[in-house]
Amino acid sequence: MDLSILLMSIGIFLIIVSGFFKNSSKKIEKDVEELSISIFQETNNLKRRLKMVEEELLLEPEFQVKSKSVTNVQNPKVQQVMQAVQQAAQTSKIAQTTTQTKPIHQIIVSQVLELNKQGLSVADISIRSNLTEEQVRQVIANGGR
Image 1 (spheres, rainbow, N blue to C red):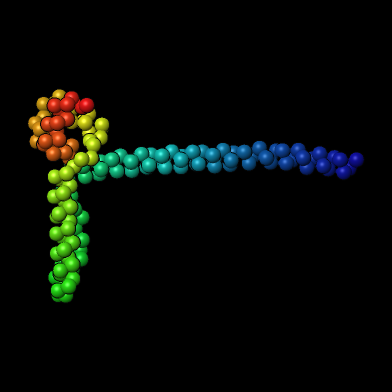
Image 2: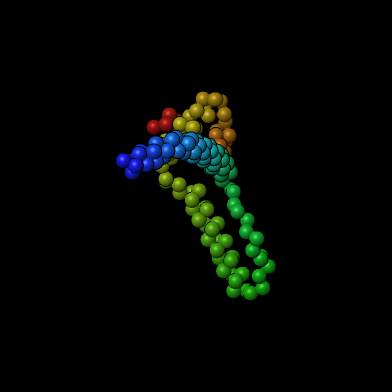
């Protein structure tokens, strides 16, 4: 009988002690919840900032990252290669502007139509939508179709 009384008292003691540990698990749950909320908020802030940067890049089509490489290269072969690369880049840029057969995304079409409704000029709409003025005129003339 002493063994059963001893086991019962140990069980009651453990039940009482477990009541104190529930508070620490609630604290941990609360900390995890606060952490997840803060991560969610930071993620949303980063998404907003990324969207702003994307919009700025759409508004600035001539945006280029300038490298801090040495421009005064003494080797003539390297200078020739650099000139060839620059010429190829200019040629591809000209080819892109002259033969843009890529369809205009529906979001940009709706943006162009909305800016037109607001009374902006074709040049302003062209700058904001990163389209040529001719493309803007076509979108407005087609009514988004």
